[in-house]
Structure formats: C-alpha cells, structure tokens
Image (cartoon, rainbow, N blue to C red; front, side, top):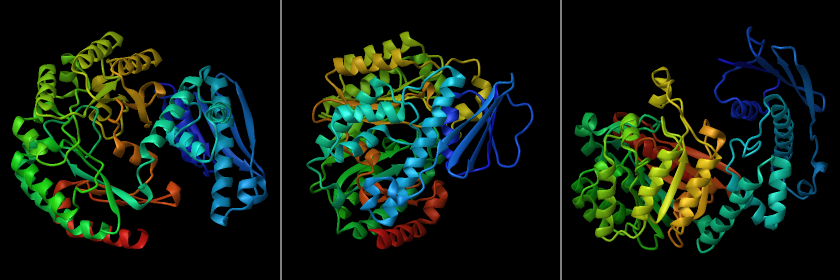
Length: 503
C-alpha cells in the first residue's frame, strides 16, 4: 500500500491539511506525526510556519522534492470588511483568509503531484451550498458566486452550478420561515431490524434489544416532557423522527410516543413532520395507520438499492418486493410526500445495477429522492472488517452521479439540498431531489445551520446556533441505550443548563 507521512511542525490548520491530502489519496496509509517522519514513506509532507509564511515541503521516494510558500495575513487592516467589524469578527475573518490561502496552495501542489483534480476542489469540512448561500445573502450575483467558487476554491463548473442552484432553492423555501426565532425537534429511535454493513450510527438490532424498547420509550417520553417547557419561548417549525428505524416501534409504542410529543410540544404551526420508515421490513399497515392519526406530513421508504444481491451483501435482510409493497401501501393510506434514499458506490454495484435501481424507483414515482455517495466511516462494519471485503469493487463516478440526476429530473424533481462527508467514494456528494413543495425543510435547516436543533433520544446531538450560524454549541446525549435509560435525568439537566445559558 502507498504510504504518506505528514509532519506537522505547525498545527494551526492540521485537520484541513490532513483531509485535503486524504481526498487526493483516499486508498493510502496516511500517517500524521509531530516530531519526526517515520521511515519507509512513499511521499512525505512537512507543514511549518516561518515568519509570515506557511511552508509545505514535499519529498517523494523517487527523489522529487520541493516546497511551496503561502503568505500569512496578519492584521485587521487586511480587509475592508474587518475594518468595521468587532474583534471577534476580525479574528474570524483573518483566520478564514489564512485557511483558504493555505488550502489553495496545497491544492495546486496536490494536483501537480497526483495528476488529478477534485470535483469539489479544495473544499473539505464545509457544506458547499452553505458557502453559496452565504454569498447570496451578502448580495452577490449567481455569476459572481460561480466565479468565486471556481477561482478561490477550485470547484468544477458543474459542481459550482449545482451548489448555487441548491442555495437559491433553499433560500426560496426558507423565506416564509422565521427560523432565527424557531427551532426543530429531532427524536431518535436507535433500533433496526438488522445493522447494515456500511452503518456507523448508534443502531441496535431489534431482536437483541426487544426487551429494552418499552424502557427506552419511557425514558424518551420523560425527556419529551422535561424539555418541552424549556423551549416554550420559541416556535417549533419542524419535527423529524430518525434513527435507527422509528418504525421498529410497535403500533402501541409509536402511538404513545406521538401522543406525548403532541401533548407537550404541540403540533400547531409545525410546517413539516417527517418519520423515517426507512426499512421496508419494519413497515406494517397498523403502524402507518398510527402515523396517519397524527399530522405526519412526510415519510421515507428507503431501498438504498433495488438489487437483491446487494441487499443481501449489505445486510438489509429485506427483499426488493417488500420495498415496493411498503411504498404502495403508504400511497394507499394517503401519504402524499414519500422520500426514497439510494446509495451509490455500494459493494459490487456497477453502472448497470444503479441503472436498474433507478428504473425500479421511477416506476414507483416517489415525491423526493436522496442520493448518497457511499461514505465508509470508522465505526462501520464495512471498515472494521475491511479485509473480508477487500476483493469487492466500490464504483462511483461522475457518469453514475449524472445518471441519478437525470432520473430525478425525469421524475420532475430538482435538487434542493446537498452535503458532503469524509471518505466518500469518488469525492462526490449527497444530493436531495424533490418535486415542487415536497422538499424536506428539516434537511435544509440542519445542513445550513439556520436554527437550533433540539435532539432527544440515545445519541441525540442538539445544535444550538448563534450569530447567524457563525457559532454552534452542541449538547450530546449518551449513545448507549442502557446508559441513556439509566442516566436520563442527567441528559435532561445537560439540556437545561445549555438552553438556559445559550438560548
């Protein structure tokens, strides 16, 4: 395996440097160190700051070596914007300029060394649509934003156009929402019929944890009852039941939880209420009938793929036919906003298999479609047991992404939200497509970090948003189900302290 070492003598932008190098060399053994470089590396980088310059030296095993220098911005006088801002704004602006300059210089070096470019240029750890949205809100024209993204961030024309299109649609969707004075509510159900090969979420197989589900629902309702009064001074805009798989709950458990949410938070004025009915093998008529008794406006029936051989490999343990039947049943019961999630780059899937999935999805005609590029995180079984799967191919390319976009357009959907993750196959993105008036508002709010998200349940991560999204504080619930149940009062007090201090 190709080995790369990075020596950080200056660690100011360590994460950004590491992630950009990883994006160019995704399949390498990448090592960070702080004192000396290890022996036997095929390529090394040394990152330092000397006086008013960042310096990155490189040395390849075959003898090619050199250094690039990037000038450091050092004072408030460096920008007109900084001159009229607060000290915090000035510091933040200077830091951003330095980071952007360093990443631009490093990107050019990596293009030279690797002989390739990246579709999203030097953007790492950032939501491209959020970047475009910020420029829109600053009064820039679409053409100027595109130029900025191409020139300063090295983004391809196609990806810049996608980000700007989505930012404009997001802005249009959010214009009727007073999101600065509102909040969204996330409720997590961490149980699944089985754990998918690529999953890194806090999910627990239902058969093993079945006896704990009632206790979990009790604890969750206790958290609902305690947290609702803390948020009475803000308006609830959207509710999202995620997981795991919320529809692993029995009809009675689901009804009890939904009733508690309604009695404590209230549904009046809620613009969107989503329930992830993601696993077709967890959906029954009785559960969908419970959802219809409450103002649930949007559900997801997620196949990920419509190829049975892949479903078997990734541990979904349901059939393609079950997906179709669940979707048809939801339509029959009157659900008029159904999302479907797909993953591109699953093990063993080639272009023809993705094409088959899209054909099957088109026959169902969902109202929205979320296309994920496979991202294998450290906690996923696909990564933990990677030796077992090393012979499998993981194919994703621009042709496949274009194919998914074309299918969405043929179903009268346009892109409305976008985000990227670490370790995505092909350095691509996740895109949500939706018909007119069917876009997921919660998805936009959480991606653009426009308002607080109060998260209840095991593994819930609340985001308290300030200063127009410039500052975010997180409040975490423990991930382990047993710990969550036993320490529920502690979780509640964490939120009470944070909401009191920051909101």
